[in-house]
Image 1 (tube, rainbow, N blue to C red):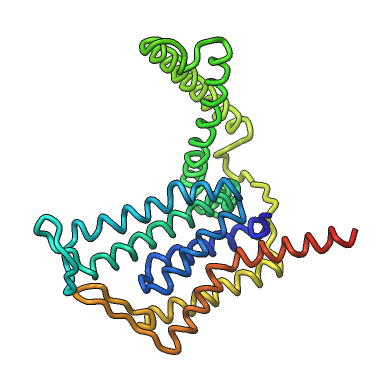
Image 2 (cartoon, one colour):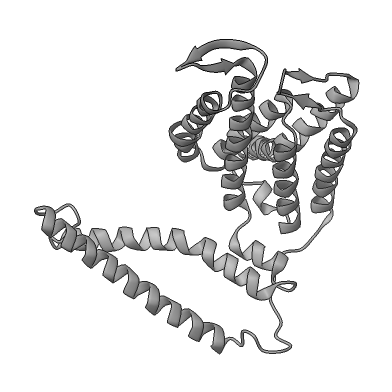
Length: 293
């Protein structure tokens, strides 16, 4: 399933900008929990077991490490719990460490989903006319690492098949084989860069008056989706500006909870879970159509 990816690039980009800004801006525990849960769920719907492996092996350990490190290095706060090497460990430092860890991991997971949804062609469509050189540079840079990773895997398999793999032989032979694989990869990258430049020149890149083809069309479905995202983000930002999600961690922990905070949390949950809702709805619709065949 990847229903949200089929929406217009403006919709995709607006969603990730809104949710990442809100995640970075709001340190209230309720909003951090909503963002983390949604950021954890959506990659599972996009990539399945691959995303679950990333979440369990990288994201969650990173969350624990950041949460533990903060009270070890920051000793502010009024509630002393115990001492480690004569350094006080405070409840406030622990809670702030957990909040900061949840925020950073949530942003990391949202960027992981962003890379899956906002592809290079969408990025070029959004910024190609306003900043053509920068958009092309960023698009090629983001594409380079996955291509190099794929190519070095192919080279390694080919070298391994003829007995020259990086894990074959003694230490010196392994080093020599690894350098040979790296040399092949660099040669391939340089040749590919020359071919790309020749192809772009042949297609008229940089000429005045050159037009660009696009398959993206903004329709009523995109407008409705963008309206939901915009309204939810507007409620969240207005509430944050008004202090409805105020939180303080030092010197003691204080946060507010009143009716508008609940409204704001509902709008934030709608914003964060909106792509997941679209994916689940599309999956249910698809299963219903299959059952009628």
